[in-house]
Image (tube, rainbow, N blue to C red; front, side, top):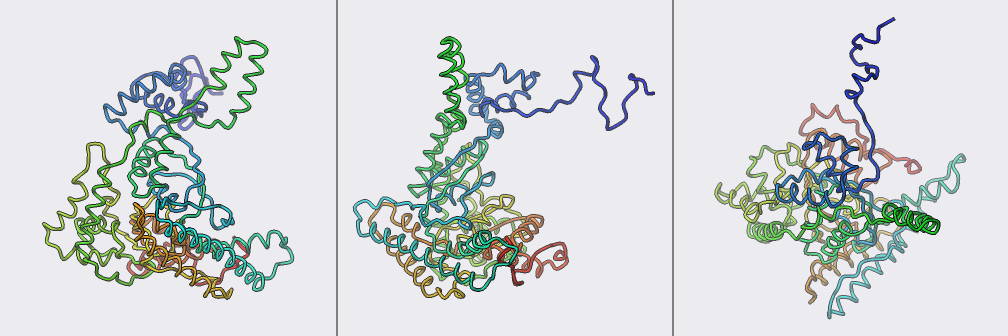
Length: 530
């Protein structure tokens, strides 16, 4: 029998003795600490020999604030904010604002799905048109008409699917109808305007939150700026406690039995918790972002001088051997116009080296001491997909955070998509009439007298409107997106995009194609399987 004094075999844990107790690995989850207090405690690992339990027992919110004011703001140790994670509920914001809100590289959350829920009664956002009553009326009429057609198309597609697909004997009627309704919503959602109300939840660290708030406050859209104000207020003010009512009732019961004990209980049970009051207090509109994007927009207009937008495929793999300088200049201009990447690159490549460097310099001219570079500077990826797809399907592609995404603005210039199921249900004329009317209303509203007429006009664009976005990634991410999004249970819009991404890689890098496990988007799909 082995002696207790023998050295344990590799990969085993030594028995606990007085000599080894202090050398045992200990792992425990932490619950109940305020986000900023927890960030302070974790940051102290680099500055103190105290354990996590000892640190948390001695830390107060006041001490955490003092520490963060010193190390986060004065010394610039921004990694500390990565340790404070905060959960938010954001309710009754427009689809437009939701797309802007979640446009973060480091973002985790879930949004209400337009694939599985009826949005007809969700309500919609109404911009401030000021004294321009005619624009306000046209806006309202356009939104109401889109919702009316949304309902009609849903009913027609649902009936069409019921006529085409018979219920298997083993399937319950409720399951059968729920599945087909989801498929009908897949089609009808193309008519939802960007003004449609939605809700989402997000869990982000305080550094992401700070940059998110700053970005929102810098938006030209009033609703988005107000969202930044409310997000900052929610992080700075008292957080909602899911057990708040029960804890207050318990504290009152304790106080009724013993007032002194009730006072002590109140300090623990009913105290206000502020999620990140210190870490977001200096979040403000970014002059760097605002001025830079304005100058890049003017540079793009000067370079393309109003020429027609070239036709472009659904997916264009633009992985030609560009210099890093050409890629940077093209990408910086891409996000501030509505042209395809190839069309912009053609003009950029024709510039002199000095002019090209001037375009790149626009991206850093107004950068302050603490400003992160614009996302457009994330360059050098070998696979660059210029994608032109419907906004509804794009929102699903938008969730892929491991790639760099550069979005262009919302516009009617690229037309609209006609989803599968609309022709089969006999409602294509109704659908196209609604889309054309909405695009015409957008054009008319953008010339109104309200201060933000162009921004307000975007809200009437339906999700079937096409949007252009540049996706830059490595091979692993291209394979992941192609495999995941081409699966049969996915939405037909992004399934087609994922399949075309694979086909583009297959054409240009045939030796790599066998490594993909994709589903052919042209193969028939069992609509009763989700």
